[in-house]
Amino acid sequence: MQITTGFRRLLSHPRLYDAFQDLMGARSIRRDLVTRYLRPAAGHRMLDIGCGTARILDFLPDIDYHGFDPSPPYIAEARRRYPAQGRFSCAMVEQATLADIEQFDLVLAFGVLHHLDDAQAHQLMQLAYTALKPGGRLITIDPCYAHGQHPVARYLIRRDRGQNVRTSAAYQSIANSVFRQQRGELKHRRWIPYTHWMMECQR
Image 1: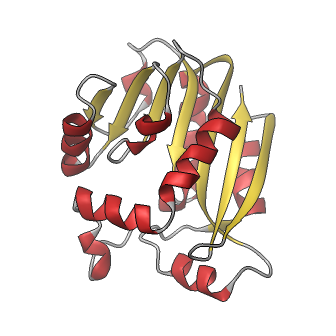
Image 2 (image 1 turned 45 degrees about the vertical axis):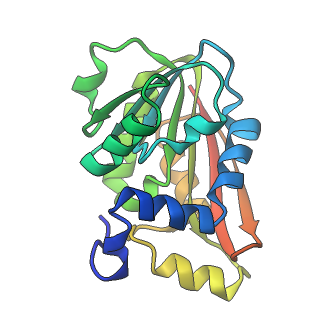
């Protein structure tokens, strides 16, 4: 579930969304996510659930990238920006979708879980598990409530479009319902104060 009224409605426009993300430090976050968590190698297969405008491709090597997002404007922008770097589908990823697709080395859900209630988040975990090769990894990143976080971070997170922001323990609990191996890290951003939970789950 997400809010798409008022100021948040502007974020449905892909270029305004990208500009806002850049203001919030998204480029450094994506770089950190790729180097420390995804750790992709040339030739890897990657599924990006909720890929948005696929800006993660700015930091990826030559991989077999499949991006899914239900927003037609976001997918149109991804196709315009990266015409030869990935395959993009304007759709939700479902188990039936994966039946005809080879399994992946990596699955990314960037800012997705906090848009889902617990049942939907559990379904995403199951879907990612099915999509991964044995030993493959799911990487997630989401805003997070944390003890002692900067009040500006808490203020901004409360006004996020996603209405299911959780604590790190709550995110871990959802992951543990499917994945036996997982680790996470709480990241406090300083440029504009914000708090993220980054999680790596291995099949």
